[in-house]
Image 1 (cartoon, protein in one colour):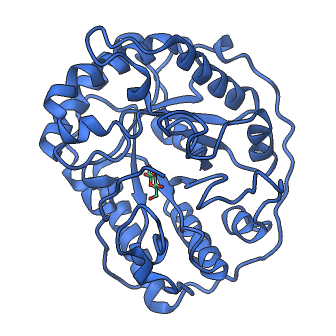
Image 2 (cartoon, rainbow, N blue to C red):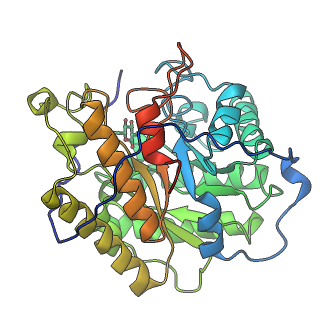
Amino acid sequence: MNKSYINRKKLSSFSYLISALLLFNIGCSKDSSNPVIPTDNPLTNPLDPFEQNKRLGRGINLGNALEAPTEGEWGVVLKEEFFQLIKEKGFNSVRIPIRWSSHALTATPFTIDQKFFERIDWAINQSLSNGLAVVINIHHYEEMMTDPVNNKERFLSLWSQISARYANYSGDLFFELLNEPNNQLTPDIWNQNILEAIKIVREKNPYRTLIVSPANWSGVENLSTLNLPKDENNLIITFHYYNPFHFTHQGAEWVSGSNDWLGTKWLASALELENLSRDLDRALSWSTTNNRPLYLGEFGAYNKADLISRAYWTYYVSRLSEQRGFSWAYWEFCSGFGIYDQQTKFWNAQLLNALIPKNV
Ligand code: BGC
C-alpha cells in the first residue's frame, strides 16, 4: 500500500457510565428495496439537513476502492452484490471515497475522465437503486493538502463538473466537499475554500444537502475551527473518530511506529467510556451551539487489534453517537478495518452486530 499518514491527535477524557452488553449474534433484518431510477425525483425544494441526517443513519464506507490511485490497486473493486448485502444487513447509507484527482487533467479545463465518471455513475446508481443514501466526496487529493493555493482552481473545477453531472439526482445523493483537509490546507484557507465550493455547487444544486468537514484531519477538536456561511442552512457537518489512536491504528502499515502499539486493548472500562463520552459530548456541544447536524463519517479499528476490543469499541462509538443524534459511517467494508470478507463471503459477525445490534 502506498498511503502516507500523519498521526491524528489523541484526545482526553470526561465522565460517563453505561452498562449495555455486546450481543454477539448477527442482526439480519431484511428490507425489500424498491428500485428507483436516480433521476426520477429531482430536488425542487430545500431539504431539512436534520431530516437528511436521519436518512444517512447507519452507514458504511466503501473504502479502498475508488480512492486508490486506480480501482483495484488496494484490493477492492466494487461489486453489485456489495450494495445488496449492505442494504440487507440493515444499513441506511454508504459513503464512497473517490480520488478524482487521479482521473482529471492537471491543467485547465481539468476535465474528468469520462470512463471514470461512468464508473462513479454506476456506483451511485447501485446505491440508490438498493435504497441506500449515498455520500460521494473528494478523497486523497494530496496535492491540495501540500499546495492549496495552486490547486484551488482545480478543486473548484472538479466540483463544478461533479455538480453539473448529478444535478438531477434525488436528495439521497449527498456531496461531501473534501476528505480530511490537513497540512498546508489550514483552517483559514479551508474556510475560504468552503465558501467558494458551496457557491459553485449551489449554481446547479440549490437544494442538495452538502457535507463539510473541519481542517486538521477532521478530528472532533477541530469542529470549532469551522467558519460556515450563516445563510447556508442545508449543510451536515462531518468529523472522524479514531481515538485512542494507538488502539485503532496498532500495526497499521501506513503509520510509522505503530507496531509498538500492538496488543493495545479497549475493553470498555469506566475510564475508556469516560474518554469516549467526553469526546462525543464535545462534538454534541458544538452541534447544539451552532445548530448543525453531525455525521461521524469515519471510525474504525484496524484488524491487528484483537477482535473483542474492536467489537466493544465499535459498539460503543456507534451507540453513543446515536444517543447524541449523530449519523455515522463505519470505516470500512471489506479491507483492513472491514466487516466483510470478499474471499469467503462471510461477515464478521461480532463487528456487524456491534454496529447493528439485533435488539437495540
Ligand atoms: C483514509 C484511509 C485510512 C483511514 C484510517 C481514512 O481517512 O482515507 O486511507 O485507511 O482513514 O486510517
